[in-house]
Each structure stands twice: as structure tokens, then as C-alpha cells.
Length: 77
Image 1 (tube, helix red, strand yellow):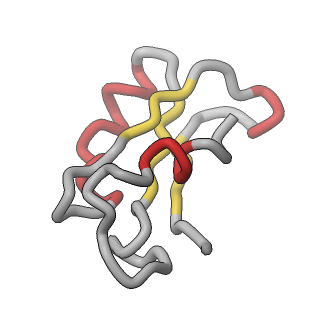
Image 2 (image 1 turned 180 degrees about the vertical axis):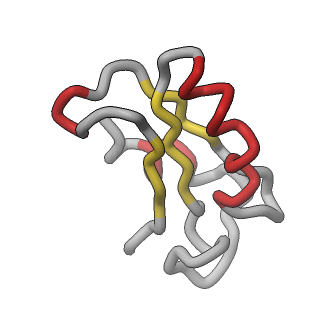
């Protein structure tokens, strides 16, 4: 299953330090995190936003309402 995501930062991926992972609400999508880009970057963080399965542009037939959050976040290191 493919999850759609976006990473906002002022540096190259290889130089990226601390990153905030924004998890949207059960009826939302990664666009909810966009208002936090400026604050995250000005504080020295990158901002990673993604659509859970079944939300936004991610694959999936339904929203898991958090039951798969550990599985879906497991691939983010």
C-alpha cells in the first residue's frame, strides 16, 4: 500500500536533523499540517505530513481510525 506524503525542510535530505511528523485527524488529510510549516522550519525542524490509508491521496479502501497507526508509521525512520 502506498501512502502519499510531503516533507518540508530548508536543507538537503542527507543533512536533515529533527523532523516533526504531523498525524492528521480521522476525517482529514496531510493538508491539515501545512499551516505549521513556517513555525516548524523557523524552530529548526523539518515537517513531514502524510495521508493515512484511505485518506487524502493515499491508497486504501477505508480509514482505520487509528487501529493501523503503528503499522503505517513503522516505515518512517
